[in-house]
Length: 425
Image 1: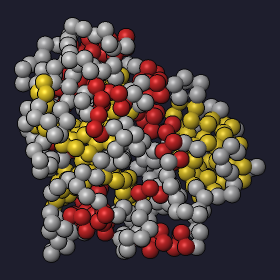
Image 2 (image 1 turned 90 degrees about the vertical axis):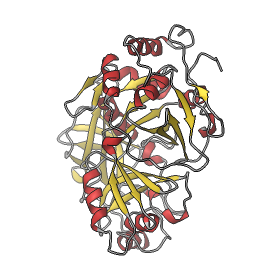
Image 3 (image 1 turned 180 degrees about the horizontal axis):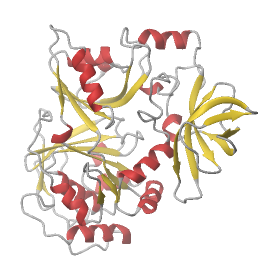
Image 4 (image 1 turned 45 degrees about the vertical axis):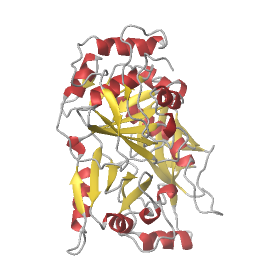
């Protein structure tokens, strides 16, 4: 590895300088050098620059406690040409097509700090989450992670959460729309004798994801190769000038790639180090396109009171043998009696279509479109929708709305779901 590239230390090291070259960009592709040059046009302070050193966590993994709030990262993004909403969400770097192309041919980094982060602590936290969501938390150890689904008592979907099991707490990543709902719901189910504490740490943390086939190379160049090839949800703790950084395998829409949970004060340094490896920044507008194209269900669209968790095809997040939990009886009946009426699919469309449009086959209503987006080109159209079983499947033609032709396709996020042995997806 070039000694002038950014260097993350591995957990069993003492420390390594985190020191990239600002003058030599010969190893970067032209687009990577462009974004790095825009970032470096602003002077760096000694307190949060990429000259800082990344120290490993102590032998006993720390738990993420709220660090001081710092807003320097949005200034860093603005310097790179980002368009930021009044809510503080990076909407675009005006490079959406380039970023979507890098998802297939390079690597992109996305700021998802507007997503919710919930910290669940207390001695009873594992059993509590085990009973309140669909995954088997009791089989997990610190340093591992999983996806789980919060559902209603009748197994209607509220949201998918990604969970990191830490030494003294569990950190949940949830959608922006559901953070308050899930926090209130969990607090509601804490009984008097339960030793559980729920804390919303969204504003006290930053969250990035790394997506694309070159993600592993980026991690290796940053001296984080130990995480490459590890199981989904595996995570390790680091610190930047004493501020916490947790890096995990997986990036919400895929079991590949990586996620980074940082202190806001450390966020600019982490972001710049990732960009220095030729990674392309992506805004939330392109991320939403990617979500639909990859088939990741979202609250208010695919995850609503209208559809249950099995119809959403979220098999990887569901334990079928862990015992009683909220929604378990309904899920068990659906599986036992083969009661699924519909399934979520991707749909290639011939033209733009609005969510809520009726899906028909031979003039008969068979489903509903739930999400729509254009592709890399405005002439490309793609959607997600629920379709009745036996009405249509992969490769079949449907009509969306009045006269929009569609072809049913499998999508990556749903394709990686693994139903019980012997059951067709």
